[in-house]
Image 1 (cartoon, rainbow, N blue to C red):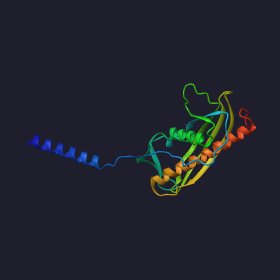
Image 2: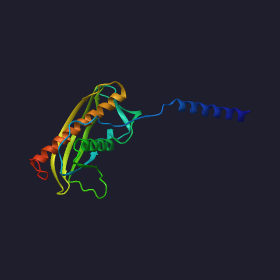
Image 3: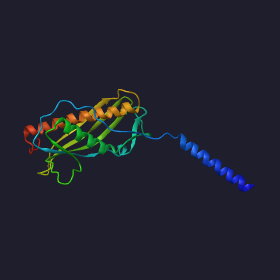
Image 4: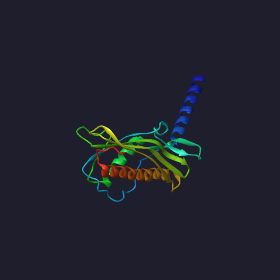
Length: 204
């Protein structure tokens, strides 16, 4: 009798656990997507590598940071990035720069064997998250380097504020994309300024 009771208890426990598991919703994954590019740039006659992108430890997780208030954010276990945020940003920036400046050869760090980019833009992010429920901030440092001469050419700090226009996680992810698109403009301005003073001349 005791064995039957124990078996029944074990079976009911397993059924309860499987029922809980069945009620747990599957995670939802989101991609970082930049909106359509703006006007074309006439930059040409050099190749460009984008990356590496370094991010703070709090951003180096799959869970999307959800703001609860102006002072508190949490990592969501349900809403997740489809790939590491630093890799996604580098890939999307490279794609957008290639679209805006079609005469350039644009590579993503680490670039493939045989590729020889002349210039490299690396990014060190301090923020890429909602700083309050309706405001997202993308901030950090851009560094433009000459890969051939192995020397830095220019640096630029940036701080981009983007309104979260739509409610929910989809609106938050869309704001990430718009902020990243504005970062493309910062990179293009840096490249165009460098092109004006000479591609291999450090900025003073």
